[in-house]
Image 1: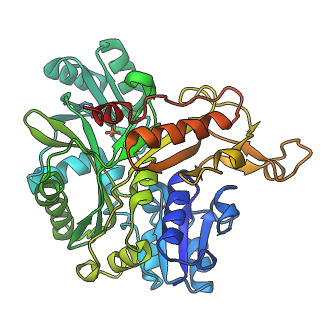
Image 2 (image 1 turned 90 degrees about the vertical axis):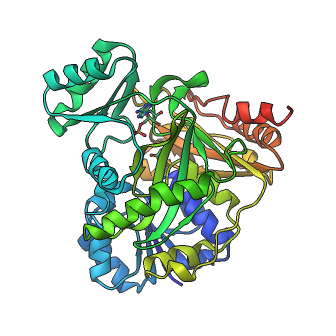
Image 3 (image 1 turned 90 degrees about the horizontal axis):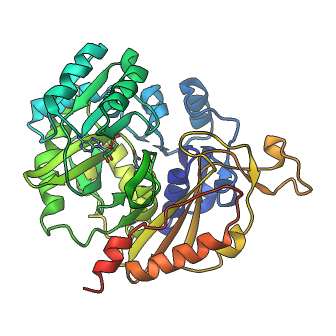
Length: 430
Ligand code: AMP
Ligand code: GLY
């Protein structure tokens, strides 16, 4: 099967590695635009713009792809999946309309209300006065969310009333949601959906804050681990029955069937499971650990979802091993951006069989006009540079391998969290 993957991050690199690991020949995968790391594994089309529906459809039909997998949210919101579907290409990725589940937090709240899905109380605001009233109504800590895509930076959780209002000010033109604060551990649970039925993948936990001990600003995600041994046995079934299926059914009822990956961002509160957000795509960096453990052929699962036949797909099976990923970020991330800089030591880091490196913001020196004697040398070009992914028999071992590998990677000014999966590794000894 010829597969086109759209996107350029570590998530897309993880999707490619999982496809290949579970049986897809590397030669039948093309990634647009991809990045320097993905290009070491499969063919990339760096000039192809993933949010340009006309260019993507032209390329996909010309090369007769059997399946398109859409990684990031931007092509979904730009209607690329609709355009590909109209051209007759099976797509794993929801329509523009169904992707509003991620693109508009107020739409997501309406769907959840209609479907009876448990979520936090929220107020939609279009003026700062409304925001002030809402945060005073709910009390501290305050949760203020931009009502649109903001690359993981649209949410603030703070007890500082001024900071909450200042954040609202930044996003008020797109609309702002003020939400009640929910306390408890967070879980990311992915479901494959063909619009009518769903299949769960294995739960993961994301580390959203920039620094150790969950300090610092929210980011796109600084690390993750899977599985979550502390969850009750019936957790996945409960989320499927009370959250994923009712949501999928409600979208079908609205005439916007959801074909793709339903990402349920959950908080396990004392009063039960609550949805904090939906995304319409694989999470980054959770995908790096979830797909690292997948044993079932990914190509078959995604294709069955894309053609509306998930009912005939096998139940996804996962390794019992522990997977963790640690994100290497450039100096200043997420607040400021650093200049392009050389990365050293990646080969040495990847020599360990437990380790895989998924690239996000990397490029060859020549492609970004970076002066270096070696035109193929790798350069970091953005905030989240790469994910070190490690799998081993338990979290303690997975952490050792991950951090040993990380120590071998050199990038001036870079930083990473040292406490990914630390608590769950400590609990293994109890
Ligand atoms: P979101 O982009 O909606 O996932 O929010 C980003 C992060 O903010 C989440 O992963 C949570 O850590 C935090 N967050 C969002 N909503 C709430 C809430 N209602 N209560 C507590 N924390 C929240
Ligand atoms: N890791 C959070 C996200 O993908 O949105």
